[in-house]
Length: 316
Image (tube, helix red, strand yellow):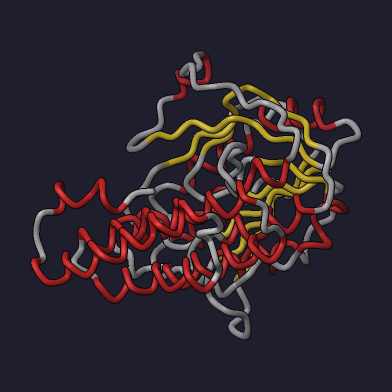
C-alpha cells in the first residue's frame, strides 16, 4: 500500500482538484493522510465533504502541542501511515492518473523512484496529461548524493515515492527550516548509498504560487536565509568535495547578489561570512575572486548604485 501524506492550510479554493486527482488514480491500493495546519477558512469542511464517501482518506488536525508548519504536519502524518511506500504531496498539486501505478511498477528493488514534474499556474487543464513539454530527461548519476546537492539531479519533496523503511531512518524532517527542508532531508538520506529508479514521465503537476515559502525567499532574501545556511551546513558536514563546495559557493553568491539588489547589506554580509566560515574558496584562484568581490562590495556600499555595472564583478 502507498501512504500519501498531505499537509494543508487554507486551501478551500484548491483542495478539490488535488483530492480528485488522487481519487482518479488507476492504482487503488493507497491511503491518504491529510493533516490540517490550523486553517482559518473553510478548508476542513471542504475536505470532510470531499472524502466522506472514501475511507482511504483520513483527516487529522495538527495537535496544538506540535510546531506549526508543513514539516511538522508531514512528520505527524508519518506517524499515522500503514503503507510500505510513502509519497509526500502538496495540497495544491495534481497527480497524473497513472502516477502511483507507474511508480509502483518501476520501484522494484530500489529505495525510491522519482518522476518528472511540470509546473503550472492558475487553473489546471487536464489536457496536459496527454502531452509532454519536452523538458530534459532525468539521467542516472554515478554519485547520487553529489548530483543531488549540486543540482544535477533535481528532486523536490514531492518527486519521489519512497520505500517507507528506506526513508524512516532519516526522519523527522527539520521543523526549524522555512525553506530547503526537503533538500536537507534528502541530502542526509542520499549520503548513504541508495538505489533509485527513474521515470521520465511528467506525473506530478506542481502549482507555482506567489505565496509559497520558496517564492518568498526569492523575492525577499531575508526570508529563509538562516534556513538556507542551516540546510547547506548539513550538506557540508556530509561532504567537503570540491564540486559540493563550489555549488554551495555559487548559490550563496547568488543570494549575495540578490541582497545587493535589495540594498540589504546585512544579508549580503551574512552571505560573505558564511563563505568565509565554511572555507568555500578552497583554491588560490577562488580566494582571489572572493577578495575581488569583497573589495567591490565595499565600494558598492558607498555609492549604492550601478547594479548592472557591478554584477559581473560579484561572480566567480
